[in-house]
Image 1: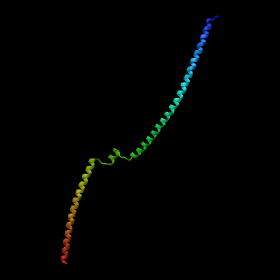
Image 2 (image 1 turned 30 degrees about the horizontal axis):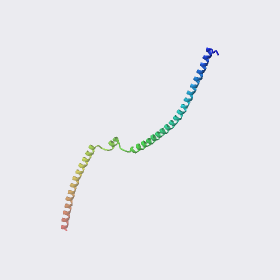
Image 3 (image 1 turned 90 degrees about the horizontal axis):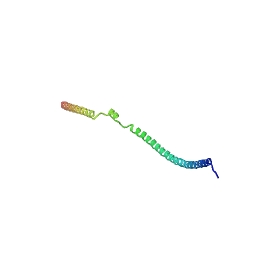
Image 4 (image 1 turned 180 degrees about the horizontal axis):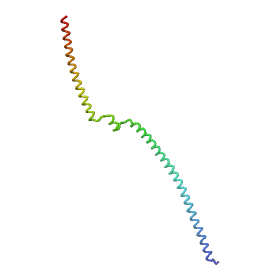
Length: 136
């Protein structure tokens, strides 16, 4: 049988097409399987990530609530500005205490003078009362 060269070329071309088709078909099937595995694992990973994200958002919400409560609780606490506005410094306090001591000392002296004068007054009254009784 006499095969001509063009027939050999056609047979080689047909064999090449069939081989290429088989290789591509095998690769496509393998890629489809890989894609299904990837979709399955990514779906699982996606669910896990969603759960983790939801847990983190819940923690964030809980922390925000705690911060709000702490801010409300600490809003009544004194800070330096409020403390300086409400209270005096140590030096001013010492000056106020010295002034109070001086006022107390002066007041005690005046009270003692008044007590002395009252004692003198009582002595004078009792003396006059005893003189008046002697006259009667």
